[in-house]
Image (cartoon, rainbow, N blue to C red; front, side):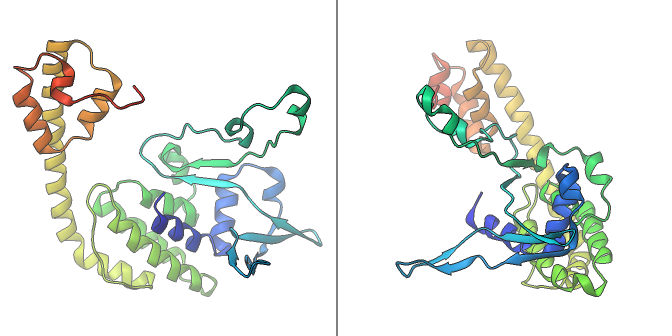
Length: 280
């Protein structure tokens, strides 16, 4: 995840109301659900080490269970890539296997994976008041109209005084998310108020929608060109390996045109698309 994106998530999850919604909405654990989230507060994570270097930890929280304070350090990975997550979720799976007598001492720490793209839309829809659910929806490619509706809902859900800090950090995060929109980015001036963001977005929605439709037409044309070239290559060289399909799907319009010109005279698939990656 890019550094700016990681920093954006750290900004979001520095707020106890958003951490509460993450736990209550996406961590199915009866014990966690019984905690008194009205007492949730961050623990200072910056300190100076003995060699005088400034250090910063991930956010650690404390919360009350009954009359006792508990400290929570939740190893959670939030993933929003287009491909599904297949990496190991256990530290032990990343380390060489130790000799048999040391095996019981092998570190076994696991992290909780929240793969945003794998969460069904109906699951998010069942959490209409959950801030994290709304954030996950905005991470997915959305039409301009759908984004506007989500922003309106977020602004309406955070009007009470307890959400004052939330409104600011969510507005900052949404502006960045819209710039990163995979379908069609929208540039907005710097702002830190959710109501201002809603108004600004409503003023630009028609312009954004026109750009979105134009981008959709370009994408549709590229998909058609990829389909034609895939059929031509398959007719010439047989079923395509996975690396070739990946390269085709990531190709620019110019690359597709060049490959289409080359396919009739090429002696092999490599002559058209180039050599496969080193791991194939």
